[in-house]
Image (cartoon, rainbow, N blue to C red):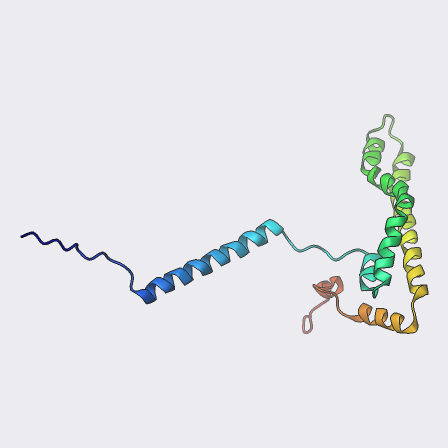
Length: 165
């Protein structure tokens, strides 16, 4: 008579099986976090200048400022297009035959003027919103400006540490 019983297969005891599944899940979650961080890249820098003020505006002023920016988009196009052409203009001035230092100076000094024109337009739109605010809304805006922004502030990152000589 032949023995028809099969030899026992090796299986993990039930508690070890759950530990293995849990470990696998944790490893997959960790791999997902690392992959997400690599794909997303470094954190973005805080918005420049007036954008920080605009973000601190209470509603509905923030929405109204955004709408005013969209509505005046055509007013911004000229200076923005000129700014985009600055690199090309400087490269052309630097390689012009004969070289003209005055042309290079004109290109280099034009950029701050263009940026200032854009900043003035943005300032005007922001001031329009502030002018519409009630005293309570201005106080809320001031409080939002006093709150520490998310992420390290540039001044704090570069400030000397206490106790450092």
